[in-house]
Image 1: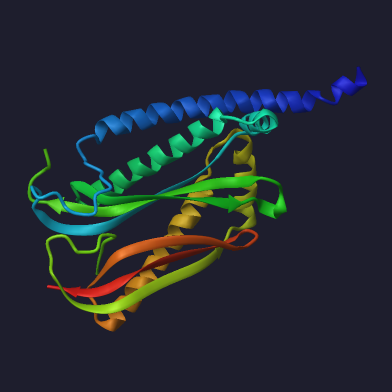
Image 2: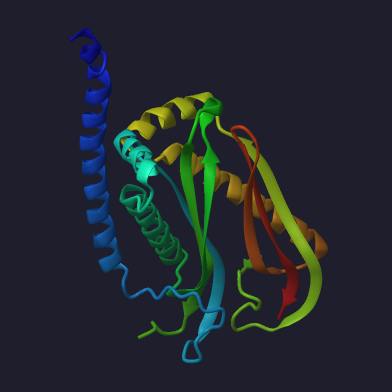
Length: 156
Length: 104
């Protein structure tokens, strides 16, 4: 019984982080979908050239980024996954959220700069080292940047 | 100073090239942020402290690049790129580079 009691804090931590992580993720996805809907008319492309129909009046570099990390429970799941190998869904959803968030922030930065579209969009991913030489990754940074364009007319 | 990560400034013609300009900064996170990030690491989600830290650092790298370009007499920088590298435990270099040009 005493040996089992030693496991309790660990189990509680797993459960609590699972619950909070799940709530955070669901709320984040809801916010992402809402903003994606709202800013849908801002075209975001990876083209390097301006489409012929657009009349450019000005341009500016737009940069946005986000740093994210997984919760304790997901890290534990990923640790288990490493035994059998294969797809780690919990990390996939984290990176998906982070990229979509970075893209939305690029759109926000473009709108704030008075732009109507963004071309030559690039995404970069980098790992942040964990503090005090602990194992694993502290966070993942996603940077999104592109050239925001001010146009004579809104693109259709 | 007009910045762009395309080869041209859309809608403008390049009349003179000055070569590569760059700016960089090495930043370390501080302990307060580490503790907060450590807690945040349990529940997951965005580490806002780190996002802000890297955003400021990148802004400074861009600013240094702009200064270098304007001291050359350029009025625009094209093909801007970013690079990030961790030079030591807990410190990262943010690097921005591009080609300084004059546009009409």
